[in-house]
Image (tube, rainbow, N blue to C red; front, side, top):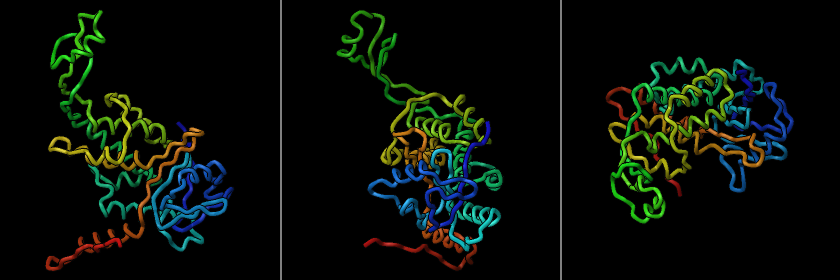
Length: 305
């Protein structure tokens, strides 16, 4: 598979205008319209709309529009920023994200992951794949859940009304509600949905085979609609705690995905971080790491008025 991804790298507070070419990629009307639709009436904090273009705010990270990835790096003296400077600031940003614990994974070497990636989006995808591969290798957790439907042996409780309605001419069947112990539960619904999303979004040939392998080996479970409340209601126990890291990444990917319902081509996925908050956290973590044992360091407390 050929890597067809187009890549644009910009910095905080930088503007992109219609038909402007950056890194050999033209910012055409389709990309602008997709981002305008994503901005919507209520707006998003990541960028502002300007005449025939957009201007990025104090957020860093990555936005994928269709097959184009727009990477936003920390602001610098970028008037003459070339490929070397962009790679330098990309590595600095990734190191900051690792330092504050956003990328906390089961992989034996996070630095090896970083060396293989060309963008933060690739890194996110690879981290999720690594986590799910780890879960498959460890053995998927089964849980009890209620199941209702027709079976050929009477078990659980008979739903008499539905049984009469559906099985009047099928006396060999019983409509029952019973408990079953299998992999059909919410954690697997979420991970399977995320694997399918990666299959749809990914344009990086290096991880395409791994996505296909996961789709073959991961049990095909029900598709569900996910909301913020879906993740808020998840309760982990001793057995399911190993799912937390993959679910955290899935939460970011699924909740920040904006499908293009009109054209079906220019989907938008935004994984962005407030640079001011990220810098505060990085300084706090760095100071705590190197502090003397007799010193106490606490983070800044904020209050909204």
